[in-house]
Image (cartoon, rainbow, N blue to C red; front, side, top):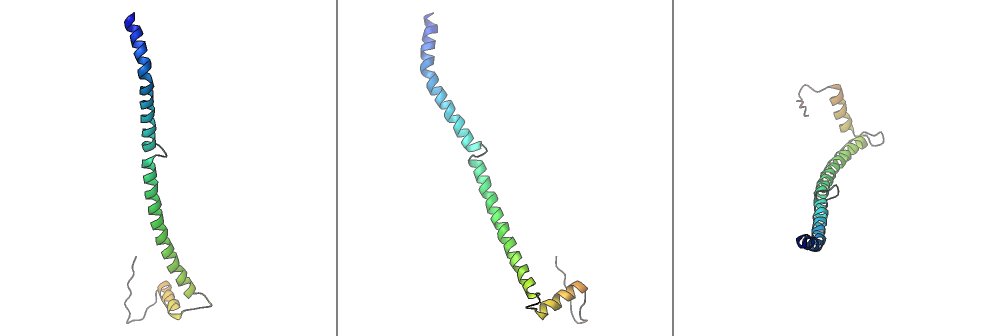
Length: 103
């Protein structure tokens, strides 16, 4: 009987620290592995960096296309650009010219 009472007494002193340690491990695990944890944060930052790189490439391509469109607008028509586009679309060339198509 004395043994059981001794176990109950000591277990009451041990349960508090064990629960606190368990809670600390639980919070630490979810801070690292959870949906909003460190690993998810690192993955999101990598996705944002890749998206910014793609955005820069697309903006550069857009500015090039916008420049070509502005050269073909009726107000500022560039004859060389018009000649180049007409030859490309119609497939015309001079006999002394070489045509290279790139993908």
